[in-house]
Amino acid sequence: MIQDISAIMFDERQIHTRIKELGEQISKDYCGKTPVLLCILKGASMFMADLMRSITIPVEIDFMAISSYGDSRKSSGVVQIKKDVDVNLDGRHVIIVEDIVDTGLSLKYLKDYISKHNPNSLATCVLLDKPSGHKIEVSVEYIGFQVANEFVVGYGLDYAQKYRNLPFIGILKEEVYS
Ligand code: PRP
Image (cartoon, rainbow, N blue to C red):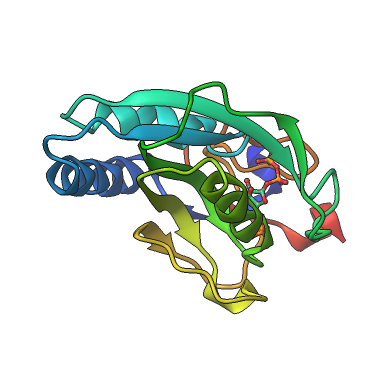
């Protein structure tokens, strides 16, 4: 796997430090509340596991699985729900936990979908934001890192379902996907 990576963008230590900060901020902002952390599978699985451990207030967790990319590099914009929410979100403070915002189409779909469940509040926490990829305007309350227009994998992010188990975020060599 490692031979397919041209450079490490964020190493384990940088990721850990930033997630600790995000957790502290969320713990402050939601003090006295019990938010629902809604992890969007599969990409956000590793982020979720670390983020929830960095939050010091009570939380509930739930998982949704969606897919917009399939095995391709480009977002189709058509989001499929593969696993729906289980927790009743009516009146709850919901925080969507995502690995990356690229075009923003998945997040827009998710926000619209969750809004229909009548939450008390809805926020988003993403590990990576790729502003150059945005096709629509998206507002995100908590961002780990902003990234340039590179193909990033690792720490949950895949290319054709591979590389998710890399402990760091790296740039995939162009020859691998072109
Ligand atoms: C990835 C990622 C986001 C979405 C972001 O999911 O986890 O959900 O793409 O891209 P966008 O902003 O262009 O919509 P993917 O469909 O690849 O599924 P995965 O999480 O299982 O890897």
